Length: 253
Image (tube, rainbow, N blue to C red):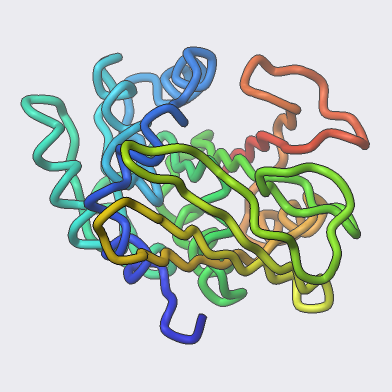
């Protein structure tokens, strides 16, 4: 995993990203929440990829700045955006600050944990706080880590130190396998997506996450002047419980 970073992962997977994750789309409730918080202002998405959230949000009339570390991901978003009000930017999340005030900054589908180093996560929250208008919001969606449980992997349950290889999904003429290891002492979750297709070389798409507990994210946000406004178990605003598998947290400036 030594060669991994946010940009390299995007460059490796950009040509098959929509095929692999096309069915992993935002819910209507998710777009409704984000559109509500963006109101008539600008929304900045960190980890915008090929636009699975940015595009439907822009179709709701929201101005979106999509930020991704991968040039190839940025280019795909630009190509798909058409005449929508989307700016696609290639930048480091820890350093990026929008050229205009933002009503909303958001990172969903565990993107915050994919900023897989403590300084990067801290830098992102600091820049988000600087971008937000008074009353603006930072929205994060992440899994909730539990000791001994695979963080957001394809198979729930108890995790040994090294997981078995499992089938993640079927693709035309092939299969995507998933293997992961969890190092709780480092809060590190390393994984490989392995694409096997008839007549093609094996493709490996490595990734890793640095995960945090909700209370730690709250403390980081508070250190940069952000206050927890809401926390839900899902985008339908279901109540967050001690055993919730993920959280949607809303911080306000």
